[in-house]
Image (cartoon, rainbow, N blue to C red; front, side, top):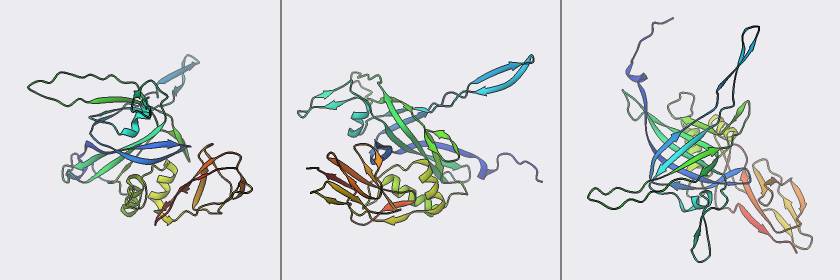
Length: 291
């Protein structure tokens, strides 16, 4: 037993700032090809739901049910990545004409906030991750120049679709706090290398189960092998590997090990399985054309 002590210096936690935003393409259930989101000003989290719905019986509150919780957010920034256009409903012609009002895809987004204490203002950071993001149309205002010039800022409202998490309810938002004593620093570094990329690997956003695997066991470096393709019979032979999944980008399905007969031109992408990362000089995407 111990007596409560308030306001100890190392327990006066605070969060501040927003930086290191990354946007990831949503492709066939995965989040790949991350690009930096520069110029972040604010990321406002706006969870909703979890509203009470009381059920009465015997003249009393029999049970209080809560509605499903949903995650949404607003990004405010001075700019957006060029790749964000297709998620903002904008497409371009070959001649450069930008056409708005197009279909909006699903992407992943992560950003960093700083965490400190009164004793150590730079104690660590929090990596925030949102899945299944879709951007809603937003207002844009252009003001005249004046003697107090200001940059034009933009904002986008995000709605989300949850992803599965083993042993928990599906969620669209997870976070990793570097000051958590349960976090292994070496495994956190391995996760950051995946999120931000290295000189040999492209940035990607793992799903929650893989992040948990990485934080627990680190990563194993592997190199993907190209599937063999017999042009005479249009037969693709997928290597047998527990380290790599081979995904048919046309359908989003993971291809089974062994021979598969292709019936149409197919893009196959290699993806590391949970707890793995690609290393060395490698190719991870191939186009196979049928006769």
